[in-house]
Length: 404
Image 1 (cartoon, rainbow, N blue to C red):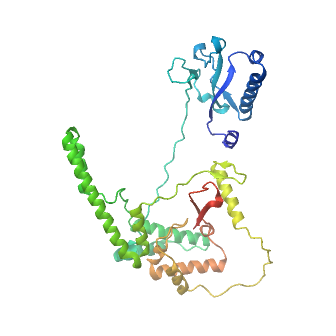
Image 2 (image 1 turned 45 degrees about the vertical axis):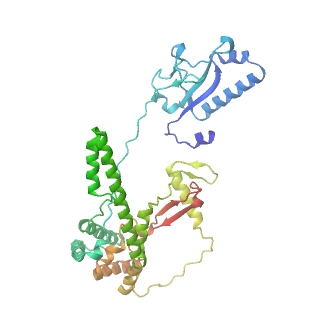
Image 3 (image 1 turned 180 degrees about the vertical axis):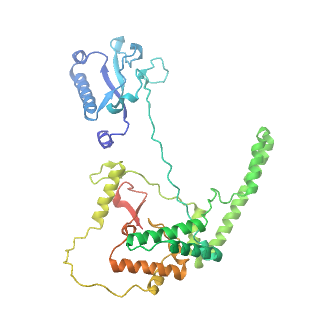
């Protein structure tokens, strides 16, 4: 408990429900009534609670000035003495969130327990979640199959480049190159359609399900229609799986990517569930986003740390021959399609579809970067995506990284 309380942030709401044996009298009189082991135990519990309250900025809220019958009580032996044993504690910062005189007990509640239920009314203002912009995925594969669409994309890119003014800074040239390709792709290339949750579902089954819903008043008719829906669902699912298996056999040698995609659709393999927490070096659990990023930065710095001795930089002219179009074309051909993009959102399919015009523009930009030695900011960034495993998900040493 102390480790968790110390790791929480100042803006986190904290409610603690505690069961403490404290007499509903003055503390001095309580300790006078006890002796021996009972007195020591009471002093230890009281000091522990008061220590928590002082160290973590808590305040008790279950002892408001309400009517006596609404104060948590424990009847002593033979009906002598009263004890207030159940408390609710809250951070002092959020004490105003509790309504006045809202903490009380219900002595008459029949809850099959030797404790009296303690309740408190708490006002909580939730943070309004911002709707993040959706990342629209484009159907880039259509550029290889649809000739008219590819030509339309090429014309759009050329028109946008011709409308731009010439700039000298490398950063501005890169921004123009990036914006032209991404804007033209968004305008011309259609987005991928959202796929249904059950891919084997057909319109006929949906119509049958609608008829079943309308037959709810007639038990026999509903039962008969439900049986038909189940039979049709089983038949459609079996046909869908058989067709997928045929596609897997067909693409086994020609298109391994499509083959594995079909296998994943059939098996419905789910990714390993991730967690937003992380362990620090000393073993403490980190829940703050900023501290988690700092821990990742620390880990990556240690992982790629180079202890080799630094050599003096030689002052000489390293200018060499320019980058050729043949080299750029060969490099682009070696790149795999269908891969995730980086911060620039430029995929290799967008450059391939431009053919010679795209190779020329890319080569000119690379030569400018090579001659000036200035690298655009986007090309200096790397994205590390955490791929948590099943075990030790909170430890960075047991987490794979995928770099873009």
